[in-house]
Every structure is written in structure tokens, then in C-alpha cells.
Length: 402
Image 1 (cartoon, helix red, strand yellow):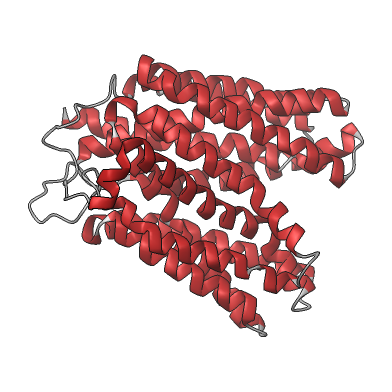
Image 2 (spheres, rainbow, N blue to C red; image 1 turned 180 degrees about the vertical axis):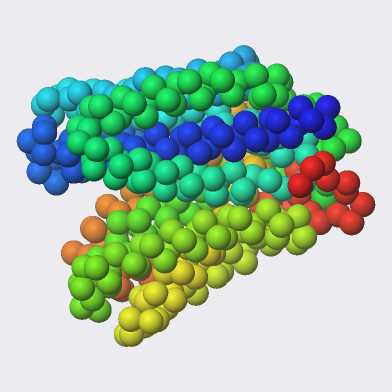
């Protein structure tokens, strides 16, 4: 049993890396596809909304399917479909075909995303200790792999169609080959290896499971809105507000992304030691301090420090929310994760647009105060994780593996 559980954990890492690689393979080829289709940045921005809508729809479909059919069926199917769909944007020749391609690719990516997160919840429950953040860290590793593969393909003279088709085909093989190592079904709700249980606060008990899932989804929306805003506005902040060169400004996002990755590699240990509520609360508070430093600091070093703190603080928040949603009802882990992830994804897409709209009213750095307010609200509401399914530190827990 221990060997099969370790294999399931490794397979889950593989699918997270695969998901990050497939999405990254599209991202690195966006400029080439944009030029081939003949659209400007504004039109591309509108088409990317379809990618998000497709992902949202895929999450809502795949979540209940994962509960019904099991991750061993849905996860590899989602991975194979996502690999097959990767070639479609490269084949597009006009805005209409690109729109359809992005909608299909987004749908397939959403299926893989939510099903692998639901399986990660089951793996975490079987381990009896936090492992979710480590899975999310490997998603970032997939993005790095995609950038390296894209650069190598470009140097080799491959066009986007050839590069994306090759990556997608390899993704299909990996998705299908890793399927056997996945857990066949969700573990029992009250297994001996399940995470520790704590007393639920009266307010959470009155709210009920459905209300708790809605609150987790709202928190995911706020946290992922902050993450989306950082993705698109961190470099522009240094360039437009602090007068940095384009090369220097690019390091703002690099600082944020690196801090996110490091934080997710550490978050599981922190959750095991102090509890997931503490990770969410102190992480959101750290993120609030970081983005406030960005908004108010007039110096370049303050901006870099602020973006680093912002990424470090946010890094562990989403994994805790996804994990809490999955543990709320193991029999409906897929459906619950899809609700939280789906609304969170809406926040990720909305973040850049919300900050852009605010810049019509206030300066860019002052617009970041909204992110401070969202992070503070998340820190205050972190008590939602203090429930029967929350993970708190235990000295008597005997973890499986390393």
C-alpha cells in the first residue's frame, strides 16, 4: 500500500508538471500565433477570455465526473485531450478559428486542472499530512520546461505548429502512461491516515458545507485576482511608475514568480507544523504587506522586495483553499474543487482588467491598494479553515514516505 501511495504521489507530480508544460507551450508561442493570425494585442486580449471561459466550463464538467468515474479515468483523459488540443491554436489561420481553438484548449485544460487537483486531495488525505502545495510548485516547473522547449524549438527552426504538436503528442503519451499509478478511488472519509480533525467554529457550523464551499470560492477569487494582477502589472509598474528599463522591469515578475515557487515548496511543511489556517492567514497578511510596499515605496529596491513578499505570501493560499474544498466532503471532492477553482480562475482573469480599469481613476501604484484590501480580507476570513476537515499540527502523526 505504501509503495502504491508513493507511486500515486509521483504520478500526481507528473500531471501537474504536464499541465504547466502544456499551458506554457501555448504561452511561449503567443507572439508567433498572434502574428500568423494577423490580430493586434487588443483582439488577442478578447480572444484570451475564451480560453478562460473554456477552462471554467471544463472545470465544472470534470469535477463531478471525477467523483463519479474516479481520477484514474478522468485525469489521464483530461491530459490526453489537453495534449491533443494544444496543436489547435498553432493551426489557426484567422481570428475565428483561433477563437474556437482557444475555447477547446481551455476546456481540456480545465478538465485536467480540476481532476488532478481532486486526485491531489485524495493523495493528501491518504498521506495524512499536507502535500498539496508541493504539487502546485511543480506546475511552475512545467512552465519553465515549456520556455526551454520553446526556445530550443525556435533555434531548431520549428514553427509553432510543429513545436506545439510535438509537445502535445508527448503529453498524450505521458498522460496515458502515468494513469495506472493513480489512486483508483477516493479514500474513505474517516480513514486512519486522514488529516487531524479540530472543533468547528460555531459560525462555520451554522453556515453548513455548501456555505463553506461558497466562502472558500470567494476567497479563492480574491487571492487569484491578486495573482493575476501581479502577472500582468508587476513589470509595467517598475517601468511606468519607477522609470526602470524594460530589462530591469522584467525582473519584477521574475521576483514574484520565484518567490511563489519557493513559498509553495515550503508551505506543506508550514501547514503540517502550524495548520493550514495559519498558512492562509499569515500568508495573506504577508502578501498585504508586500503589495502595500509596492504601492507606497518610491524606491526600486522597495518594489522588488514588495513583489517578492507578495509572491511569498500568496504562494500557499490557493493550495490551502483547494485542499480545504476537497476535504470538506471526500465523496464530492471533484465537484467542490471545481467550484472553488472555477471562481478562482475568474478572479485570475479579472485581476488584470480590474487594475486596468482602476488606472483610469487613480495612478497605477495607488490602484494596488485594492489588492491590499483583498489580502487583508482573506487574512481576516482565514478562520473558515478552522473546521472538522482542517489540517492542524500533530505530533503523533506518522507520515508515509518523504
